[in-house]
Length: 424
Image (cartoon, rainbow, N blue to C red; front, side, top):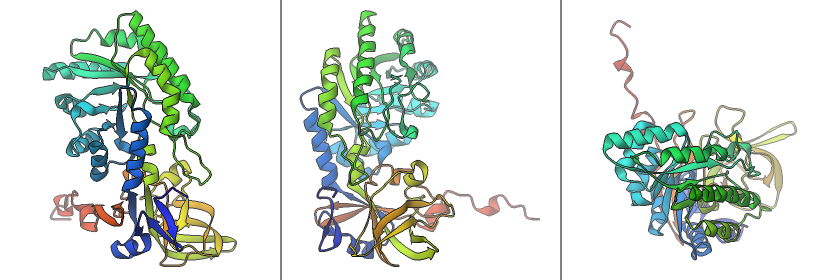
């Protein structure tokens, strides 16, 4: 169903050659489970698709920033797309060269900007005219030059969920493309800035890639106009956004499809290409493994209550996102149920009115395509420890993030007596 990474063998679900039921019994639940082979296969598909054009592929750390997973991308020659100082910090720890790190985000703080300037990152993807002023000022104070690209908003509808559509005019991201020329002319006059490129990102989980053509053509026209005005760039950064298989019937685009669509346009500009894939590299490689705590019926409604919820995987609650869910032991009988978690919120669910195997208390479920924006968006809501993370490589598994415990959850809080007066 999901290639050779998560599959049934004699009615038991495996990740590569590791039986998930036995693993769950050994380490406890919930946990995120990643297939190394799935990640490496996706890496190969991107590298193969863009091998004939000067391209830097920057993995989008926001999709999953586990250090072990970051290291896999670093070892394969990738750069890193970041949106916070923390992501840059983890990237450096994972071995990424600062010269392969790009940094986007509408709300970069002064401290984050100074940190990135001192490291000498490849480029800030600047999101506002005011940010141009701030980076120039801070670089001057540090006695350095900062590399920038300007993120332009091409006003293209990516035909995806509105919360992850980032290229429309009403979006908070980027500078409207019809204002960009003015901002470029301002930026190139700043003595503390090197204006290296142009950046755009139209959205995420894109299954129809036709909007990329419109976006890239619009940005290419801007590049040609800049050349006429004597502004020469080096990089054309088109962001990421390719979708993945969430539903069994989904047919997501492949990196080669994107390459065939955009490379003829990018080649006309003569600029080097930067890509920022995240979900399409890691999403299908991961699953959330959870145990059934209780089942119950309320008139016509059947509930399967599991030990992971919106604190572990918030996408269904926030986006009404679909994740395919399988029983770890295949059953002959099916039920229609809401699969819900332990969080004290009505919106805490993994699936609603879903046909699924008739699992019982103590059995396990696997929530597929959870490698991206699962662990990275998880929280300690309801004072719940975040899930363990495990990487499978063939018939071996490795714990790559330990499960949090209660002591971890309070170790940064001040003891109550620091605030309590003696007479209270």
